Each structure stands twice: as C-alpha cells, then as structure tokens.
Amino acid sequence: MDRTSAARYSFLLSIPIILGASMVYPLVKIDFHEIITYNWTAIVAGTVVSGIVGYVCIKYFLKFVSRFSLSIFGYYCLIMGIVTAVFFWGK
Image 1 (cartoon, rainbow, N blue to C red):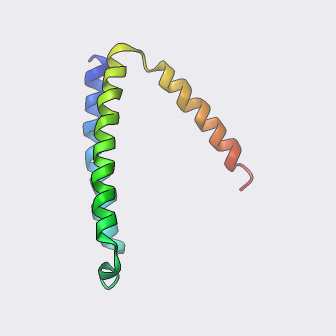
Image 2 (image 1 turned 120 degrees about the vertical axis):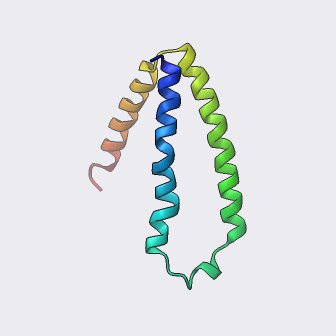
C-alpha cells in the first residue's frame, strides 16, 4: 500500500471514532433541560468552520504525504510529546 492510500485509509478509520465522540457520548451525559440554553448559532458555526478547516488540512496533508516521507511528521510528534510531557510533569 502506498503512503497516500494508507493516509486516506487512516482518515476513513477515524470517522466512526469522531462520530462516536461527538454525537453518541454526549447523548449519554446530556441534561435535556440544558439544551434550550445552548447557543446553537455558535455550535453550528463552529461545526461548519471546523469541517471546512479539517477538509483543507486533510487535503494538503495528503499532498504532503504523496511527496514526502512521514519521518518529518514523526520527529515533530516526538518533539511535541517531549515538550508536552515536560510542561505537564509537575502539574
């Protein structure tokens, strides 16, 4: 399997997890009396904007993966993981 196909497949695998985390889990914990007080305009606007930004990021990430190796991204994740661990170590 080439890198682009593997990246597309991994994004497809994330769809059920994202849907479960954003739709199913909150329904279990929701207080139906609070639904009326939600700012639905902000929720819809945030959903639309995050969907557009996510689509654009995935589009350019797939272009990046087709041209370059993921080792650069792996080093970035390793460095950010170390920085995050050091930052939150004492908290």
